Length: 197
Image (tube, rainbow, N blue to C red; front, side, top):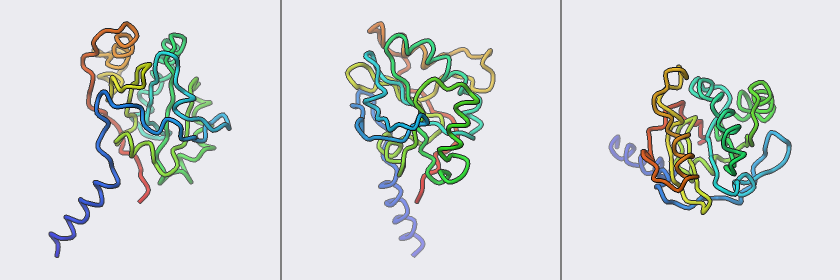
């Protein structure tokens, strides 16, 4: 009976969490509207720039997010003028009535100087479709809506002055230049997304 329960749990989990998007995949669920901190409803299509879209699965309280989120702002300052749209998505549905409520998201974004969309993923639909599991978890799409990079922002969340590999910035630079992105996938480090059952 225990073996049967384990098998059923694994089957259930496989339905709840989709496999992570493969490189080259097309931007999924691009027209689903999400509540944004601005008070408007926006989609990935709305957020996309003429040269691509950076999707960041994020939240308010994860220590990994807190360590990296100043880089969200600097990356937006650098690449939004170059036609790359940026959107952060909060999929922590279990915490939408507490630390990850819209009110807390608005407060957090204001305190940190967010200069990009920050939306609430009701039902964690986008996180499940992307196969995102962490905060932060990064997905970069080119102007043709193809996934060209996924994973981490860089190789040192805690010590920005010790970063040796600027994975995401390099990926965006190469994408804009039409050059090969290497590495095109890295390991996303962070807190687990708080999916509702």
